Image 1 (cartoon, rainbow, N blue to C red):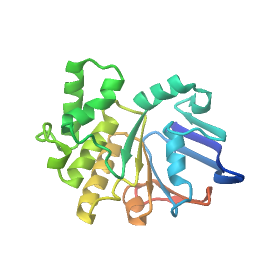
Image 2: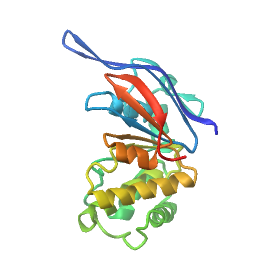
Image 3: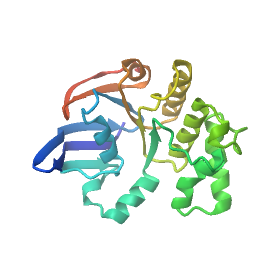
Image 4: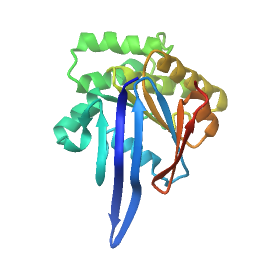
Length: 231
């Protein structure tokens, strides 16, 4: 395998008045293409901040994040926006779907921002929805879908641009056990096709179900990395 993401001495500080809060304290981590890495830690440990910086949603205070050879710290705002459109896909705990749009319309959104022609958008979005088992739900709005189906739409939206890595922040956090298991099986199937995932979770069972490696973060520092349940 080759390295997809190389995190080097990553630091993040927030200043609140006279108080400086160290959220990340020199994190080092590599993720290979085709690997699933789960980041675990208590609330406030820095795992979501790490995900946001790798996703280009936040900038580090120091260190580097290199994705497929591109250093995010060297990117200006325009290049960083292009990176978010093309090189990473996002899956959120709360789905973050647009309620007035159909499943197809929601999955088309990243393609709209990427400047893909309308006819091509429809074809690509429909294909992505079919790949997550929602080929018969294209015209359904989020309120007409179950929680698991909404998260499948979110996964389809994340992969429709063919990103190098998919970032998932507590992807089963709002789902019941059975539905959460279905999403984990979907992640495993996509990983078997070669997709790379960086996932945050507080649930060790989730990490063991899908991860090649589990990274433990406490107080902004990596304290342990161990093998997950996936060979």
